[in-house]
Image (tube, rainbow, N blue to C red; front, top):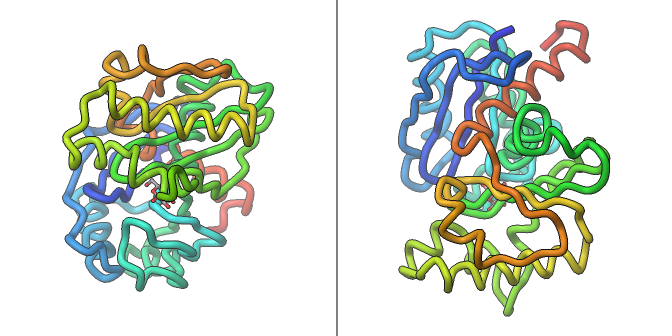
Amino acid sequence: MAVLGIDIGGSGIKGALVDVEKGVLLTERTRLPTPPGAKPEDVTGVVKQLVQLFQWQGVIGVGFPAVIRNGVVMTAANIHPSWIGVNAEQLFRDVTGNAVHAINDADAAGIAEMEFGAGKGYKKGVVVLLTIGTGIGSAIFVDGTLLPNSEFGHLQIRGKDAEKRASGAARQKKNLSWEDWSKRLQELLSEMEKLLAPDVFILGGGVSKQADRFFPYLKTNARLISAQFLNQAGIIGAAIYADKKISTAGGNA
Ligand code: BGC
């Protein structure tokens, strides 16, 4: 079955049709820039534009860079604060006329990696996936089941949000060498090991394309692996999530 997957990020809004049974893209991935400020009306306009570009009528899964509870946006770290309290699912349904299900973007990426990617061999134990891009997102799986809406990118390290120190955007903004930036990421991984003692860390997001530049600097007790889907994980996972929601609702959006 085909589902349109959309991944809303701090710098780009990406979409593609996904075969949710196989976990593969059926079309090219299309990326439009996230409008400056990422206000609800502007982001919604871009989502509408993407749906029109794909001429899509059907189920849509949206990965969103915030805590999402029953479709409602609960936090706003890298998007406009006026998102808080907005029912994003309802908003996107209204403008697109399609069935829409929304999930935290890192949780979406985690679903894709666990079902079809780097995590598929780790259905037992605790797996932590981090997406490292504009922010840092986290997804936690216990015996293959997602604990939704974890927010370890906001763990306080040296008195600051971890993502402010160790995101991909922070590396670029502060012009850090891979080695120096890795030290910051190591602090987050070590702190997470203290709190959760995971069996596996999967590192994804924009930086995972260059895993060989920084993996050698990291040391964890947990097995440390790179995400497989790179910049497709959020799209694929959001589509899988929406498909599951529709199936469990007995075909009703
Ligand atoms: C948000 C998370 C999101 C992550 C990656 C963080 O700032 O709080 O919800 O998953 O960025 O986009």
